Length: 528
Image (cartoon, rainbow, N blue to C red):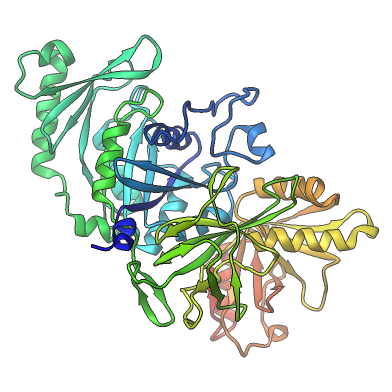
């Protein structure tokens, strides 16, 4: 096997998804600790703490102790090169989260053992299903009071429509959390809290070991034997073809905060998940092991370093090898260029790299030439990767600048932040940029937008909330928008690529528009 194939084969690129407070950031940091990428985990709880999660970098994140942008982290672990795409779990997350999932080959879904499947998890799960990407589930916080594990599995199956296969099984929970039973190694990892320390002692014991009762009590031994019998008879088999197709999720139980069950989960996950997957393009499937370099843009972030007012474009490498200063071809821009100073990220920490391989994420300085979804290839290749969908925002506001003398800065700020994908901008037909309608997936993005307009572009804005909750792209090319029969509280807008859209206050209005306008085709996302 060639060096190129070896390097690509050992890469694992995955996203971590969850509802707020399920423990996603804690789990991410424990992975980084095992990979020796960090020496100690940051505190993600206290807003006043000096230690912030390593994956949070924006000022507003530090103030709130949450992640609102997606970070990229790379580390080595037991021969694997791991790229973690850390997505915001906050309920007011952005479309950036959806796009990040487009760059992942698999996803780790973190679920709070006491709360089960929550709203944000459902949204992110939908995107994973749309991509058919494998999902691995970590049910967290077993060191606290938790729901019955059978109920949790049933909820995942019913609400998310995916089959489950528990790889390990919890013994008790909260103060009575005794450990987990590994169903395939057929032994118990016993849990012993270490005097309140955030590290735990784990003892490996076989089911037939006579010391079992003293470790987990006779009562829990009986419950475990009954549970194991039920699982062996009734649960789905671990079929990796079903996992790869996104129809079955392997489930693990543990506690990220106390480090219990995290390393066994990481080891199992790395063995079960695959090296970089092939990608669809205008010329068919692109094999990651192909010698020719190719990549696509999935994220753009301006002003990561305030001192330099820079703009970084994040690319997912899909095939071949990238070397520093190599000549590449930007398909959408139809031009050759050199990507100087390519970087890999650890949140805001950067390291200039000389080479990267399929599966890796690199950041390059962008003078403003790239857009989300752009394809980068070697000169001579002109295919395009499948477009990244633009997802429907759910909250809308009318925005204008306070100071009329700052129109230029207003236009620049709105356009740049929109290019990053944090917001979407629309306007009423036949109007310009004096006033725009901003659409976001989560309402916190309005705050982030306002904060960034003041701190990065020195522009104060006036924001007026709108009552619309739904937006649909009009798919018909030949439609006369002035002749549409719409309810009085439906609004026609356009995006800045010239596409027409409809804003609705309710699903009833969407149905009205479809019923009253024969042949009208509406879409929840735009694949341009």
